Image (cartoon, rainbow, N blue to C red):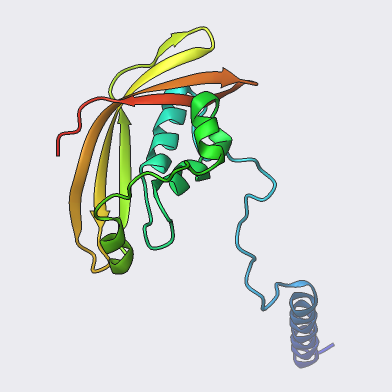
Length: 182
């Protein structure tokens, strides 16, 4: 076999190998579709912590965050937390109060403007736990978020939040507001 014939055979072998490689990649290679986004559908994720302070903070944030454009009164915010409540708070969250309390003076203006009142709640100390009950001292700071992007501080409260452990879950039973300096 001459050198030329050997070179032709080697060249043909390389072309055939390259063609097979291309066919394998096209047949078994990736796809043109992007990878699907990740999901946590198979996992249970608790939206809030499970300790008394975590529950008190989350519930009180919900109770004091209001959307006047879609809620009739602050009671709607309380009602939205009903599955995390027990005792007097759970009873109060079941049905709107009758007669309805006098509306907040700003409520109608907030509703017309599309404002939202947000509450940031922070614990002020470690919870005082006594068996299946605990008292959590918190500060609640409400801010009016205006539709134009501006914000206005509203009220800041201190509160003692009473929580009870029911079926291995802490739930808010009651709260008492302390001061309310503006």
